Image (cartoon, rainbow, N blue to C red; front, top):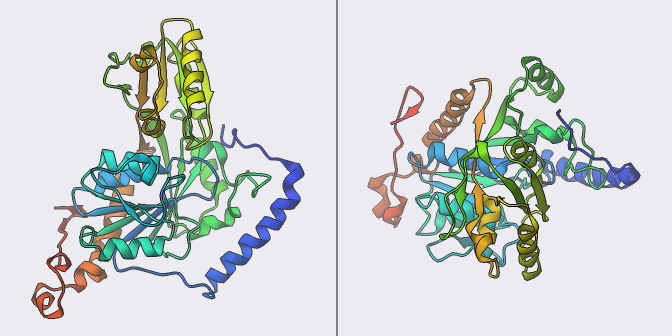
Length: 392
């Protein structure tokens, strides 16, 4: 059921009202131009939400990377939440997870041919990407979790709304989990309702379309999560069991919304024991001991399953027992579009990139003038070809 994970702390509603005044004033200053938003001469796509907690940003950003990374030079810019560094950092061969954060590190490892950088100041981050010799070939910037970072005005704004935490039912912080009023959705070019159940009925789609109440210029899509085959986390790991024949499962997660994962696994295992930590949790020695003990106490056969994001943090900790290391598996996920609208979404993204290459940073450069102007070889024009709205 939509909105079934929402919990409202009604006694905090007066504080939410005060918080809302501050958010409204900030947005008003941006809307009226008192505070300026910057545009850049490369296509910029922002993917974010207006809710605290997970709405599926990383798999959706990865979907966009998969769609475009072999056609244009993609750069992902994130703030690097809970990283152990400051300022601008570009992921490289020797970069560790603590330096850039778990989500950027995950994308860097899965897509080594793109640029992944972190910088809390997104304007400064984009400037650095476009000016640094190692990244000045950037042709498209994907902003991860930047919906509220209005100092950058993206060419395309994608808003993600969790099916289980619909913004139309939620309240502002601290009573609810909204970062800004639900009217903030009006800035989006595309709204995606994420984590939808696979068995959603046609009538439910129509109800959601009316309830979300978008403007005619906005597009609405629905996505669901596909669980990919399990993979051993550690080199010494045993062959992964089949999803349809899982034994007892210890589910170790440090993500914002593990409820859907619990629901998805329940129908495929004998029993499931959730072991939940906070979002982006950094596992400590006591956590490792707790995981060892929890697995030891489970009825066998048993396995441990964790998420891709948690895997980036678990794989570096020491102290996990030999048995735990052999029986720990990662659950990769990917998103798919419902109502057969994947091609429609893809073409919308492609059309945006195609149209903006003509007026953007790439089109403004010319090889004939580059030497005279003192531009380096990295500043030369790069051409993207299209045929029938497809890259060629």
